[in-house]
Length: 134
Image (cartoon, rainbow, N blue to C red):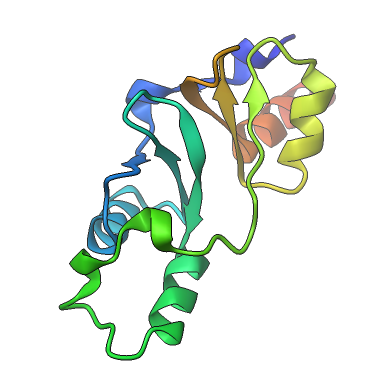
């Protein structure tokens, strides 16, 4: 078993670009039903992850910011309260499992840090539950 076995590929993952704004982030989170979403740069490199909490704290900390002005706030300017670590596709399974213990998903990148997809903690738990029960 390796990391590739758990990969939920980029073409099936909702993500934001570094050029996105707060309104776009809110809309994409709502549409995808995610609580956090990866951010990629223009070259497809993993930049970070933005959470619902990050958006909420930004809204609270910015006087005058409302739903009608969120489009003015770039996602890259929003403070990330939690650093979501990524894992290389070639890493050991144990490295990925250690990250998944603390994150809802683990972003997966290649050797050049190009985003390949995510590994969802839900899929890991389901896999191990099936195999322990069998």
